[in-house]
Figure (cartoon, rainbow, N blue to C red):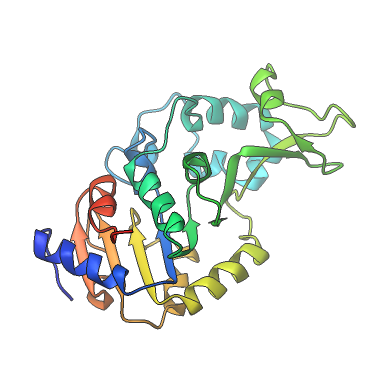
Length: 250
């Protein structure tokens, strides 16, 4: 393992990616913090902020709480999880460039903001869903984002009156099996893997790295991770700076 943030390591990471044609990117909340979307667990993250509720965020964002208190859930979502002005940052655009070069096999993201797609990426696997998508829990009808925004409290299905929910994985719910299978398939066939903006402590998502058997693991993160010792290159810093810096030439 090489550890530090310097031009030599940036060049080495770039050389590894230049040799690669099947790159998988695995990203977390740190990818979106440069777009002014807070993460959850850092010192200034969502879970450590002063809020106007005594109920822990983990409870509000759980399946049972959503079903039993949908109005409270949606008040929380609108106040703390909705960022209509957020735009893709240079890290998102760097991944679009990797795809344009024909090197990117997949983006596997733990984020629910949809910024990868907004930037132009098409090979995105969303482990935790997308807060821009909604559907009726009774009849399954997809709901438009505007229906949720314009609802005074709890959005209801225009067809059957059922409760509309976000297409995200709440606490107490399992990850989508099909998405997991696709992610495992991509990681298993990757010749290089970039991990960025994630502490790699949240499971089962972090456990997906075990399916990578190559020797071109590159970790870009603000803080150390449990997988640093297994990486070919580790760079600590802001991913919106680091990821564009290690891009191979077209």
